[in-house]
Every structure is written in C-alpha cells, then in structure tokens.
Image (cartoon, rainbow, N blue to C red; front, side):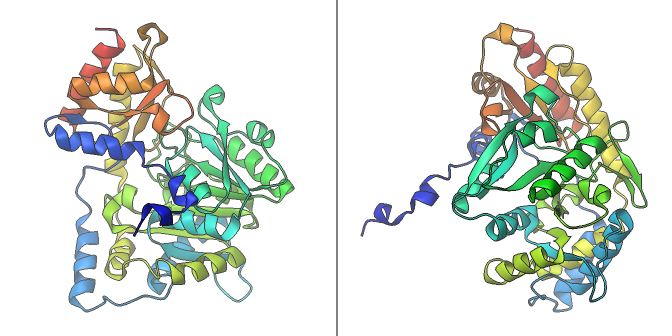
Length: 394
C-alpha cells in the first residue's frame, strides 16, 4: 500500500512550523539558553490546580455541553458584558460565547465556518505561524498584509488595498506574536468600520490581552488594564469575533482552553462544528479556568514588563527593535551592516548556545529574529549578553 499516494494536496501544502525545528535543536543542546518558545515559565496559580484536581476527584470527568461548562460561560459572559456592552443573556441576546480547545481551536472553527474554496483571509505580516495554514486547511487563501512600514500595526489603509470580492475575513492579533506590538484604539476603530462597510468578519485574536504593559497602549476596564479591542469599540457584535484564551495568561498552555464570543448566529455554527471535531474542551480543566478568573496576575505581568525593559535597554542600543507593549516577545531586526539574514543570525546564535527563531518563520521576509522573554531572569541575562555582542558584530 502506498500511503504517499493517499495524502491530499491540501495536507502537502501545510508545512511543518519553523518553531518545531528550533524545539528539536533545543533537545540536542540541553545547555543552551532557549529564548525561542512562548511558554510561560511561572507555576500556574494554586487555585487553578486545586479546582481541576477537585473536579477530577469528584468525578466531573465526562463531557460538558459542546459550548462548555455553563458556570464558566456565565462568568465570562458577565465579564465581557461589562467590558463590551454586548448582550449575552435572554432570548433576544445578540452575542454568543463558547469554550474552545485553546485559541487555536477557536480560530480553526472560525475559518471552517467562514472560509471556503477560493475565499481569502487577510492576515498581518509578520503573522502567528498558524494563520496561513488555517486558510490552506479550508482550501482558502491567506493574503499577507505587510506591517513593517507601520511599526507592525495592522492598519485599515493597508488592509483596504488588499480587499477583493473573495475577502471574507481579516485577522487582527493584538498584542501581536511575534512582535508584541499593541494596536491603537484608532487602528481598531478604523479596521472595524472598514470591515463593516465591506461585510467582512473581523477576527480579533487577543490571546495575550491581559499581558498588556502599564506603559503601553492600555485601556482601563472594570477588570483591569487591557489592550484596545474592536470588541469594546463596536457597540454592536455584528461583525466582530473575539477569541481569547487562558493558557498564556495563567501558564497552563497544555490545558488547551480558550473561548470565542461574537454574533450568536456565528457562534452557533462554531458550536455545531465543535460537536464533530473537539466535542468539548477538557472538563476538569474548565473548572480550573473558572477558578483562574478570580486570580490576580498583575504581579506576573509587572515582572514581564521589567524583562521587556531589559530587552529594550540591552538590544535597543545595538539593533532596531519596535517596543513590545504586550505579550512576551521582541522582534529584532538584524543590522544590515552584519550582512546576515534572520536565518543566518539564528544559526550563528545557536552555535553560541542561544536559541531564537528566525523571522522567516513568521513572515515573507527574513530580516529579523524573534526572542521570547518568558524565561527566568538569569537565562535572559545570559542570552541577551550573547545576542548584544553578536549584534555589535563581535
């Protein structure tokens, strides 16, 4: 039997992530400083552990309803109602909400519901590695919109030039991966107005929304500082799909928990698809996520902001780095005087036992590299020291 003959063209068009190659390299170099992975290094809150363990011990291990644990959905609906003004309760409510298997699960369901063969989705360049492949898996096409000229902000003016009759979705990622850049309120409002005018779904991927730094483009809400969001600006849920998660904020990335909120009709479609794919997010871990909503993570965010400042003071003096106002990444331009691509710089850094990710993993360009400062302080200090010397040409 020839398995090769059975593989679809769709599957062949999906490449392995460049991040996977760096992870393999990390296993080969156990002593290396690994600044490549967006995996929080802090222990998850004790309340989350206890709630998940208690759920297991009390035999809450079966399925939840497809859209998720009712208590968790209720708590999130109340939070989002305060934050956005959207109506979630009652028969006439305009918005729906469901728990997803990570933000990745929510994004996949959204693309399956909205994109078909030949349809187009506009994504920023640089982008989260999943975005182009989501389109491929739906037999659609990802159209990349360069943000290098706008300080890595996705603007309505740059998006509008790329819209065609096949455009059905625009993805905004703020705070962004790989850049850490936060959209302004003006960016959100203009993208929202453009998408409404063109009857396009605006997907706001806000996995890092609570990791927004105090000296950045934050907005105060009843639940603390948040990045500007089209969901708060919209006033109506008509064409915004909000996707957020728990793993990055609370450190349990392996629990695979996120949520999607938006037009009730669209959430119905996502939930219908979920019943035949993920079924539901892991039940005991949803109880852990419910406990997380009462945990104050401001101390952890402040710690990451101090690390961001260290990155900027160390590397900003020797290379071009747009300041990340959220998440825990910096996207560093390799100085042209070095005559190196991002890939070449990555390989040279690996030879010095510092692992980063070449910018080509996230982009059509190969001029930058991404580093994660979600590592312990001593590792970050050592890695930044090596990178700074390299960027000076030493």
